[in-house]
Length: 187
Image 1 (cartoon, rainbow, N blue to C red):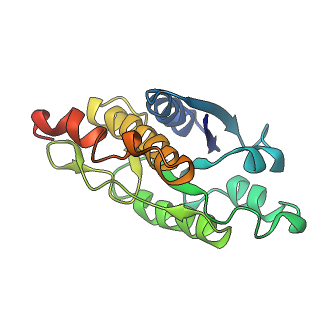
Image 2 (cartoon, rainbow, N blue to C red; image 1 turned 90 degrees about the vertical axis):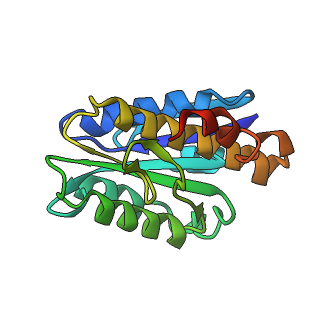
């Protein structure tokens, strides 16, 4: 069983909606178990449980929300170094395009890297001129189809990489999964 944690903080429900789409995508891979948790309900046992994590935060003043940062800052020190080799990816929403979502994604990746997670972005597109290279992003609510697709694809890719790299499932490698599914869409 591939264990995926979708951990998020949301001020206005926009990031929460994105988290739900990411979780949907992760569930698409056979053999995936997904936990969807906000930082107000998650604890260090969720980090211990997961093999892959999708981390999401709203962009507040161009960076990670203080609630997300605080959650990581308050993790028990004895858990340091216990997450090495797990797989991670990120997502963020802001009030408008150009609000700093990609900067927030990079800050979220930095948190994961410091905890030993191996992070990735998407090399493929979820719509015309729409990518999630640094993570899935949204301006306001994730109402556009390509934003929802980017979130789902990010979750699916997380499940694929985790199943492949943690469990050795060759059948789950993205080259055999996602790329085959989407190659005919031209996206």
